Image (cartoon, rainbow, N blue to C red; front, side):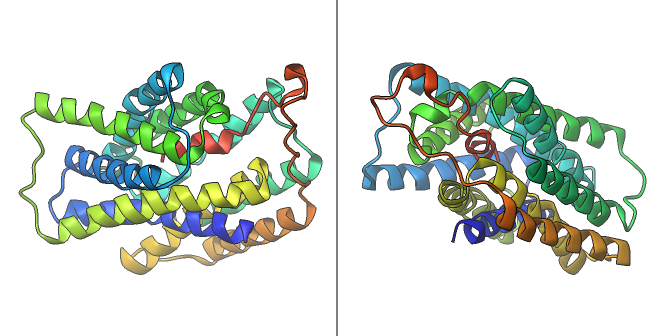
Length: 312
């Protein structure tokens, strides 16, 4: 079930850019999309937290989680959806997906993650396949503003993951995600109030795409990822998540009129093969130590993928 849950999460996240394009066609602006997305997702997750047994973040953890949402999450998502207004969804996904290599390399340099030869090979193969999928049919003229925004989104992603790794070890993922989204929603409410309020003069179909982004590509995507992560381990989950831009490219081809070239199909096959390979060769996730274990023996990196999916 672990790999399947991770792939379901990747599919939900991969559909987000497509839903965003449809929302823009319906007249939804990027600031309004972000405000409604995070507010609705925060409300849904608040209900789940209230109904569940999870401990709520308190004190310093509460302040950090709210800050992660108000600064990191809101900034990354704003850059992503602003870039989506001026560039292709597939190219945006390609640039954003430079973050797994950044995070994996820096985490290894800092001693926070282990790079086995099989894991490196699978990640490189999946990344190569992603490049073929997204570049095989050509991406047209590059928009400098869009590329800058997309790179800013990827950089924010990377920095956020590296900064937030401590808090994801201390707070259960569901209440932490709810708190982060509440922080992002609060920041966007303030920004919306300062700019005249949200623009809700869009077609009724816009609400459908906003609901799809909030429910499917935010709440469901994050929860299925966390459930899969606990069964597969962080590095395996990260590699399985490379299916996300493949889903974006496939949906763009079928729904937005983009065509997939033979090279793109080959890239998709490489990604799928790497997914199967990592499941057969990846090491089992490390067991958790008991409360009596020495603090010096506790893992220092648990895991970057938790922070990744707080940010999407």
